[in-house]
Image 1 (cartoon, rainbow, N blue to C red):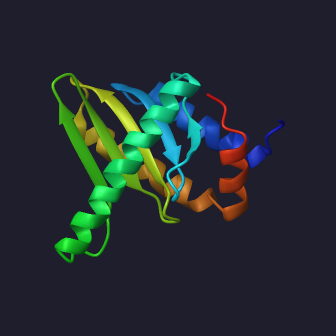
Image 2: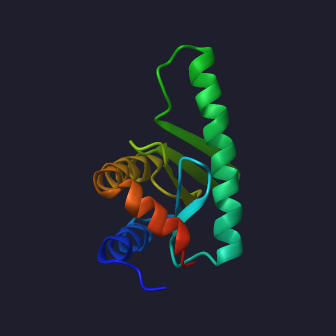
Image 3: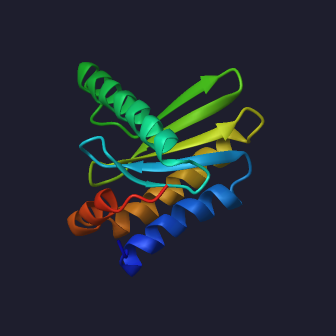
Length: 139
């Protein structure tokens, strides 16, 4: 399947983010229905699908917590583990971005860079692009 320029640019955004953000090892974009849309080239297809499922679960829990406390929506979840971090950020259209980083990353910088990436992604994601990305996931 040949991807449009917009889909290739979206995949380039993810790969560029992973390559240029110190401590970041992987990134995926997940649609509002929990399906993998795009993944950095650092992940094989099975790993990208697994990460998308994990992220989808966290997003569901985050939305539930937001409703429970009347906090008006989910922005970001950060999961701190012994050897790394998982950042999960909402994108304006209901999709989300997941970023995996090493334990020695600058958590503030990764969080900031993730926010910038979410803003860029939110500007380009249209229903048509989401459908194309889901249909043509390359990992």
